[in-house]
Image 1 (cartoon, helix red, strand yellow):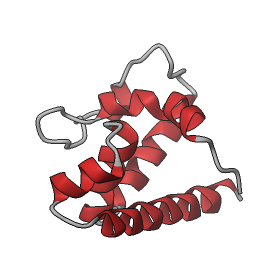
Image 2 (cartoon, one colour):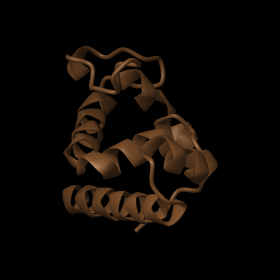
Image 3 (cartoon, one colour):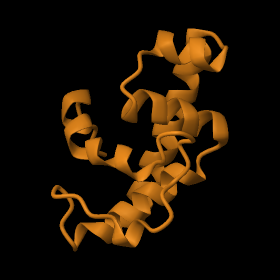
Length: 109
């Protein structure tokens, strides 16, 4: 299992923010036609898969993940936004990370 450092993770998935509508954090309608200079045509299928996995997370996990990884919010900020403790946010992020790693590893093998 490969774990990316936060800086590398941010660089690798930084373009994902464009996949969500800014006002609602809902996915854009047509990922297949998503154009970004950092996304080659052959990467679009993988991008769709990752985006789908993020979208399949339970709502609280998805919200915490998006705020942390895509909006670059601290755990304290996420706790305030979601009206929960920092420990609860930590737990949500850990479960989201584990779920995404499990889904990604199952598609690699």
